[in-house]
Image (cartoon, rainbow, N blue to C red; front, side, top):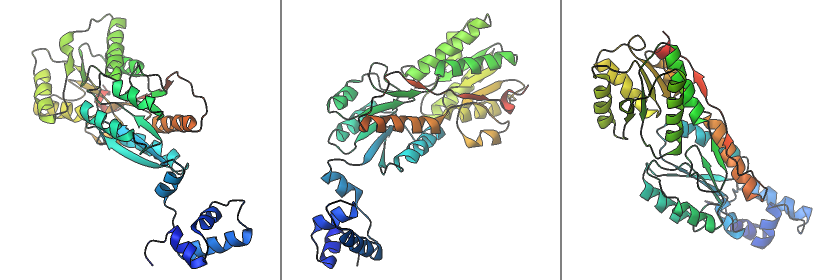
Length: 335
């Protein structure tokens, strides 16, 4: 019979579409006998409600928009899993939009969402985002928004983060305790709050071990793997290369491993490596990678749960929710 709609059910039962709709939602206005007739036919014809049509009637899309810089990073993939685990229970759909680290794309996506395509928004901002006026405009439309991981500090709304300062501090301290005396810090965007916090944690750990940080050891990388290969081989080819490396972005882990392999530098004997990574394959690298593992799944669950609280009109704290990361020691820092 093709797609079964309310109209088809109503025609088969010789009822109005309004009566069928109310019966399917267990309205007290409809008799139990009629409800049962409707439910029996709906089951027989394998009727599936259209959540979008229902949302239009209720002025709700029953959709949550999730705005991400990328999905290649395992962190964001796990965040999505956490978000979906809650959204599905609530009967909501997830609309994933990617900025590809572009501020202009982020602006365009948020402008598109102002029209009510989503009831609420979860966002981790792009590495180019310095101005938050486009997010303020969205808030002025009354659309609830929650940040996770990458946040705009000047926007008053719920935020779910991990302790990036402490994570970098722990990573740096671990390398120093393993005998490293010159630790390189690899990052991509200095403008992101997470990059700044990680950099400050790195500096503090060095200071606590009576070591001064060197600007040349804080290495700015890019989103281009070819350019990163050139940068990282240059770093490890110095007359006095680092004996410890912290890759604060997952995509830089492969780059530093390849650079060391090309230059015949043995990990962990000549250089020790830690990566901020949720890669399940971290333990399969040779040597296995010591990681700062972020609570990605838990952050996704927490962020969407806060958003639903706001959608339900319940008060939420303006203080950031901080979920700690974990240092997992493996072969890349074993000696």
